[in-house]
Amino acid sequence: MKRKRQGVDAVEILHRRYIGDDADRKASLQEERVNAEVARMIYELRKEAGLKQKDLAELIGTTQSVISRLEDADYNGHSLSMLSRIAKALNRRLAVSMPDSDKETGIRRFVFQEVVRGLRKNKSLSIDKFAKKSGIDRADVIAMERNPGYKPSPLDIHNLSKFYKIPHQKLAILAGAIKEMPTKLQTEASRFAAQSESFSKLTDEERRTLDEFVKFLRSDDTE
Image (cartoon, rainbow, N blue to C red; front, side, top):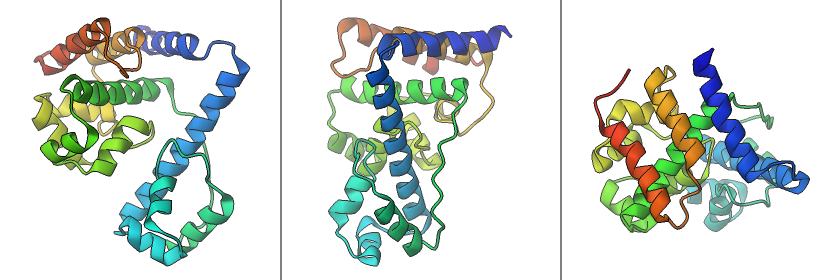
C-alpha cells in the first residue's frame, strides 16, 4: 500500500503544479496526449512495416515532410482521412483508442523523458549532435524526449546506458521495457518527479535535482 501511495502522491503533485483546476489547461493536456499517441502509432506501424518516411509517403501519395509532421508529437493537424490512407497502405484497420495509463507508468515515462532530455541539455548537446555521438537515430531521440507513449528499442536503451554510464536495467525499467520496478527505484523516481520542473533551461536547482537522481541511477542500489 505504501509503495502505491508514493506514485500517486507524485502524480498528484505534478497535476496540481501544471494543470490544477484550469479547464483550458485540462483540455489542452488531453489534446496533447491524443496528438502524441497518434504520432507514436504512425511511427511504430511504419517502423514495423520496415518503411522509411519517404516509402510511406509514396504509398499514400504525399511527401516525406508530411509524414515527418504526422510523426511529431507536437503536431495537431491529424485527420481521419489521412489516418485512413495510412492504415490502408499498411494493411491495417483504423481504430484509434486512448486507454488511460496507470499512474505508475505515467511516473516512469515522465522521469525517463526528463532524464534523457535533461542529461542532453546538461552536456550542451543539440539533438543532432547527441544523435551522432550516441548512435541513436535523430527521430528516435526526438520521440524519446517528446512522446510520452514512445517505447525505445533495446538498442537505443543500450546506447543511452553506454553514453551516460547509467546501468542498462534501470533505464529499461524507466523506459517501460521491464515491468517490475524495485521499491527503492520507485521511491527515488517519485521524489524526482515531484521535485523536477520541465528541464527547458536547466536552472541550478534543476541541475542539482537531475544530478542527484542520476547519481542514484549510477549507484549499485537496486533494492
